[in-house]
Length: 411
Image (cartoon, rainbow, N blue to C red; front, side, top):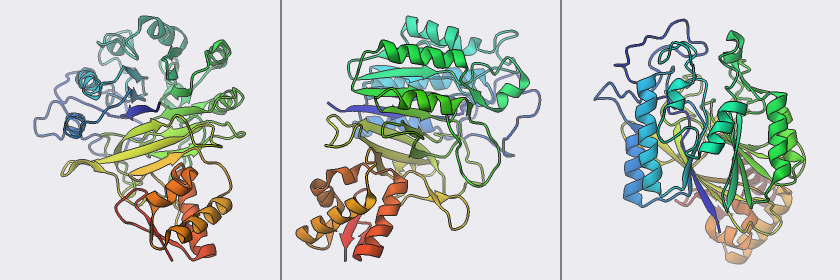
């Protein structure tokens, strides 16, 4: 049976009535307003409330609500509490069994806005409990930076990549998973149990995040070691992270079972101008398909929504937008995408050409996928490459028709 995760990352909620000012300079922040969501401004857009309304009006359901950090903006304690209350309401509206969250660098009260001595006090005092409602894994999280939750259909490991931010000023510039945390992850993997789906939730990206427009290296220190530990586990893990406000789905380095790395983007942060207009605020529904099609160790379907204050939440742009260096675009997430197929694109292209000819041109993409099921589980980078292959080799073109990937195959 398939499992659905709703993913809301980097909410950056603030409340302009919060009396504790920010001290010091906020690094790597573009000038101007940082977020749409200001609970102190009655005229401010409210992407969380509008997402809840979208869920209710469309009857959407999810088994788990995943929140990969930066709930607050600049450790704004009132914004944090208001957003967490809304997230609890969203989880109930979705019918979710649990909220699975982790802290982001903006949630760490390193400037002591809410507490005179404890940079995690505001998070620890949230109700329901943070990063999850269950007391035992919550205690593990705060003690070790790693927590494990096992449900019948999915096991989660929650990592606190911001655990060391209060220790030294330089730590706020990046995430970190320490050798001791890696040992704890390995202990959890060794203990099992084997569950169909395996998901890690963290805030920082575990490997370099090449966007081509900046030189900041704020990834999780030792993140590549985490990728290797997961690759050697045998199960195909899915790493869901936030921090960078650019949504992407890629595979980590390693072998055939290297983890899927899902960058969730941001729900409400105002996107850095260097990424505009290709990047938008997004939320996601990730379906972990069970059983996966033959030949795939894991298969996921991603539905991405995008937010604008004028239109609210709607289907993400049909064609994957792109950013990066001129001539070397990096696709972000369209309305529908996926992951799981890691085989030859040439072979898949040949199968699609045969299926399209058999069906008759023009052929709706959904009909092609019914004949070549693995074609529904391509990451956006591979889908773009497949489109080019079909054009160059088989003179077939994928043309939008309203179904995502919104394509028909035509000659």
